[in-house]
Image 1 (cartoon, rainbow, N blue to C red):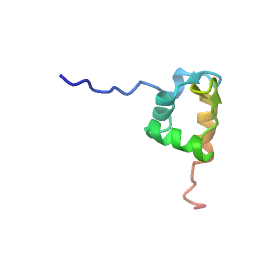
Image 2: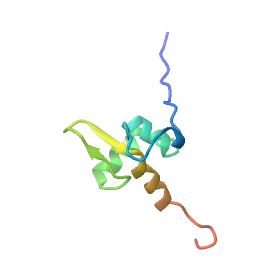
Image 3: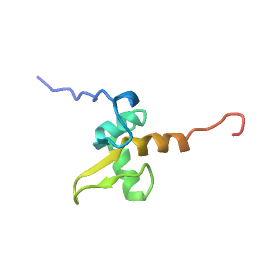
Length: 79
């Protein structure tokens, strides 16, 4: 029997701006990008702001994820 990976349930209304999310939850908030995309974005200096808690532990503030999405919003009348 194979195990299936479940996607964590995350919504904007469940979190305050200062709440910390792991990479998998942050990927869901960002519209379902992969956690690998977030890891790559960190290496390239791209993507949302993050907190490096230890050398191997990264967290994202919900407010930073919201801000990242706002900055990437495109107005079709201007584009």
